[in-house]
Amino acid sequence: QVQLVESGGGSVQAGGSLRLSCDASGVIFNHNTMGWYRQAPGKPRELVATITSSDGHKNYADFVEGRFTISRHNAKNTVYLQMNGLRPEDSGVYYCTFNNEFVVPRVDYWGQGIQVTVSS
Image (cartoon, rainbow, N blue to C red; front, top):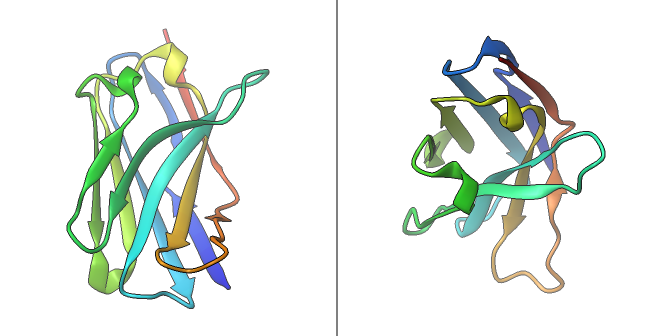
């Protein structure tokens, strides 16, 4: 089992910045992937960004457009999402996600979600 605790959400005006953090604890293997998804009201949950522990490979959704940066501190099992140039359409609940690589079957763990609100 893996537990995820998110922090750092809140409300900002368009153009502002927020930094999300997520701490993972539990059964964590050396090779794992952490990331962020988001969900706006009435819309499906969508990928924002992921990052691997082994080589720090990053994957971003197209809508990020260079505004967000995902990073991690492997020793702390923490992942961050620095969000700059926020837009109203970035509003939603942001979820931290984790999976241990090379585990079959794959199990994805989710945080409880944290609200991000961007006003125009």
